[in-house]
Length: 144
Image 1 (cartoon, rainbow, N blue to C red):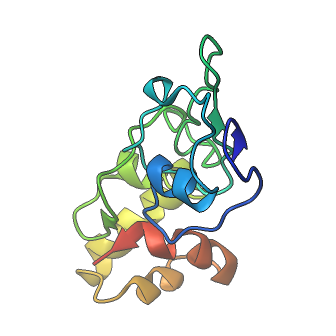
Image 2: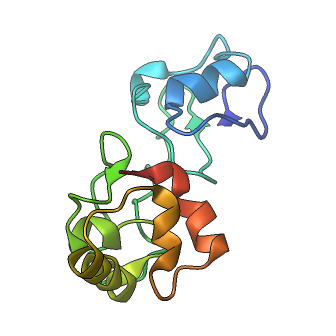
């Protein structure tokens, strides 16, 4: 958290945290914070910095989801309402997951077509190209 908060700095939140949660974890807003400039209900992206502006100061834009995926259309994808269902997600939705991209998204869909429904998130590790590090990075963003 940065800007007009009582305790600026790094805050840790559980998956699904929102701007309001980060603001609370940073000790709350400073007296001159412009909270009307923020969407307090917006879900956060891991590693993002939230700037709480003073009146008249523009807040930093929210990061685009999936920009680390590298696939076409990944930048600017909509934030899902909750974890993405591996058994119902389209290749485009999977492409928006951090680190996945177009090729891996296609492999996930192909695995599902060949093997049937995922019975656990851990099965995602059976898809060629998804190692332990990538699985750790998306584990909280997907469900079965």
